[in-house]
Image (cartoon, rainbow, N blue to C red; front, side, top):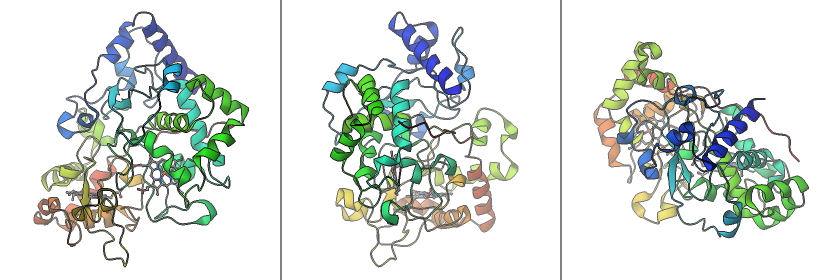
Amino acid sequence: MKALSWFLSIAICGAAMIAVATLGCQKATSAKPKAREQAVKPEDKPKSPAPTPDEAKAPGEPKAKTANEPKAADEPKAKTADEAKAPSKPAEKVAAKPVAYPVPRGLPPLPVPADNPMTPEKIELGKMLYFDKRVSKDGTVSCATCHDPKMAWAEKTATSTGIGKQVGPRNSPTVMNAAYATSMFWDGRAASLEEQATGPVENPIEMGHQMADLVVQLDKIPEYHERFQKVFGTGVTKEGFAKAIAAFERTVLAGDSPYDRFKAGEQNALTDAQKRGLALFENVGCADCHAPPLFSDYEFHNAGVGMDKEKPDLGRKDVTKKDEDTGAFRVPSLRHVADTAPYFHDGRAKTLEEAVALMAAGGKDHKYRSADFDTVRDAKVTPEQQKDLVEFLKALSGPIPAVEPPALP
Ligand code: HEC
Ligand code: HEC
């Protein structure tokens, strides 16, 4: 079974590291951590693309099966006792360092917080919680409802519908590659996946539950109790819940797109239109904000989207309270953008063509429209060029990580 070999290979590598690191694991872990922020900066782009698991495979190491199957983790042994002791301060930004967790071609090293190492048991537990509808108050909604693996880990509606058919104000972002984002949500109000994970549970229109009640409810399910014991050395806790889900989300990685293959030297990976689009993307200034390799620098900008509404979404301003952040939203990653329509924070653009047209115009006029859109605006991108840009964006889609919903206790 696929999953089994994945876990086995981690376990083998982990066990070897506990004794004396084998060549393979040592090599893998010595790809040295830099600061998490740096891992996603464009200038930090690896000279050569990240190796596929097969390329990265050291002699004697178990063969990895697919691009998305993790092979080695930096700190594979969960220090369960420590983890249980250390009280989490979710409001603080957890230091994350890139670890040698195998990532698909084209992605930078995976940032993993030091206090939440990746282990197979934790990832499996997180996956169960991700798919479990009992996490919502009325048992109708799971994380996968709005971040559906079958819909490129997002959803097709403009904005989300939670429990009791309540409709929220924002578009659900894909969970793919969320591991690299330096803040979470369109307005960046959560610092990490760990901090993010409990948000939807308590959001009255998403899952409408209380963490305190949910923890008690889940702990009564013997298999969850045992699994938490095994992973964290405690019964079900809020902290463990968040850590397990975050660890699972960090495995939802998508790369190996035609663009990545092109960068790796495959000249034919892009069509002529896509090559023209790539040049435009760099020259007219799209890449200033949608910086490769993640196609986002995770900064916040007002593009004038939705600002004509009677009660516009203030975005980043609600977090920083600064007027100049009014209507600013986090630059979305454009990896897999062709698979995640509709677009923008309120899902108002139905097609990629529509979204690109607005961006190519340098956004819509608004008091706080970001001056960083001026380069694009001044470039006077033609309709023909917009078509090439759209074609190029399609080249940012590789295989979508497939996960079957696990059996739930
Ligand atoms: C009712 C639909 C819904 C449910 C259920 C839901 N989400 Fe979300 N999720 C959203 C929306 C909408 C956003 C964007 C909200 C915002 O920016 O304010 C979001 C944002 C996120 C993000 C941030 C991604 C990024 O790029 O910033 C992550 C990660 C995430 N959700 C994971 C989860 C997890 C884990 C669960 C289950 C515990 C969950 N979501 C449940 C709709 C949902
Ligand atoms: C000044 C920074 C900046 C520049 C330059 C920029 N973008 Fe954007 N882009 C953003 C922001 C911010 C959003 C989200 C806006 C919102 O939802 O309110 C966005 C959204 C998008 C989206 C929708 C993605 C989604 O998932 O919703 C696409 C597609 C896009 N940009 C393509 C481009 C292209 C192509 C260019 C060049 C012509 C470009 N952008 C230039 C900041 C920028």
